[in-house]
Image (cartoon, rainbow, N blue to C red; front, top):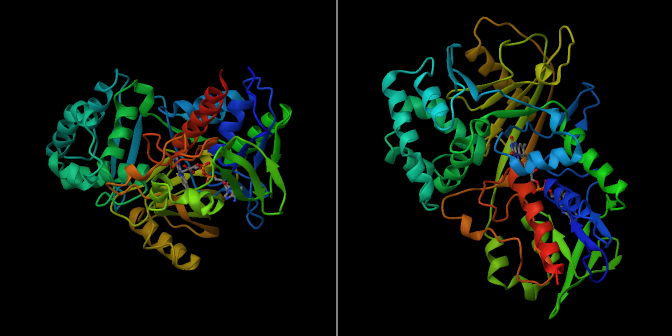
Length: 452
Ligand SMILES: Cc1cc2nc3c(=O)[nH]c(=O)nc-3n(C[C@H](O)[C@H](O)[C@H](O)COP(=O)(O)OP(=O)(O)OC[C@H]3O[C@@H](n4cnc5c(N)ncnc54)[C@H](O)[C@@H]3O)c2cc1C
């Protein structure tokens, strides 16, 4: 395939959106140079890992969970030869723990979707029949609900409309909303929740299974992408921040790096977050309503606590949800990564939509972790041997009800400028899958534009 044009195709940003766009373009035998420009020294953006010198572990910027319905991400990983490094559950299964240690467990049996969900909900251990019946009712109404999603309705209003009881909200719905939409059900859009429910529960049974990376994120996504690209002659320029995109009446004409270097091009895929994209565009372009809407998007934080414990707090499953706790999920990373170190257990604790905690000092968060673990695992005595707190203040865009309309499409109003990033209009909440889908969509649009 040939795509004629002026200069190289420039991909700005080497997060998963930019990397997946460049990998897809470079796999298509294009006779045109591709240049990836990344501001940081190593790329990966919000899905990256780094060496933590003191503990010796390679830590992710935050624990990332996938689902079987991450079809674009799985295709991306297959291209990189990395799909075997994500461990998927055979059937969806979630364990939640209550203060005091009692579990609420959901195990979906090997039935076709969505029967597996219905049977999983009905068979939930630790949940009364009345509450299970209310969830089953929502499950039965799901097909109609996903067919007419309402972005102006909040998840809270949707759950109330479907008569969900508080215990089933605490143990099932609310953790699902916080985890997938990274915000409070009181503000999050029901339409975004419908997008998740449709993909996860109304397709195949495998679609709802959780997948955990067996490797740190840079080893899973970033390094293999860079290797793949460089083997195909793509220039991946790290520590090369983009400063501006020049555009006039004929669309894009060049990009300017912060170093002052100018690269002439008529094709740019921006895989930047909203703010750096807006600051790279000229005033005249920013007046376009599409970019005026992008400026209205806001962010939601995630806080991750990495702790090294002297022993396990639980030993049967790789991850656990905490019911009615300011801390949301615990992951036994030693078990997930197959690390066998007597007297050392690496645990991740994830707090989504962590607005109330993002300004707390690390030692305050570690003390909160210790107090909560005593509440949830009474009788388990443990020592925290080491810890690292990572605050991602702009972890995702906020999926508040009524805001989906502000997300732009792949093809921007500027000729030759294509938009990627988990925050563009993919029909999905800002996740790995949305980022990779946006990258693939942008690559497709670039190729389509070049077709005679
Ligand atoms: C803590 C945390 C936990 C998460 N957990 C999950 C999860 O469990 N499951 C899930 O599916 N998703 C999860 N996500 C979301 C997921 O990480 C993101 O959706 C995804 O990584 C976004 O990728 P992106 O390429 O769209 O954006 P980014 O990763 O933000 O990439 C943008 C890139 O652009 C670069 N850049 C910025 N400015 C410039 C410039 N001027 N010039 C050049 N480059 C520039 C940045 O350095 C960055 O590399 C989580 C996110 C966080 C932060």
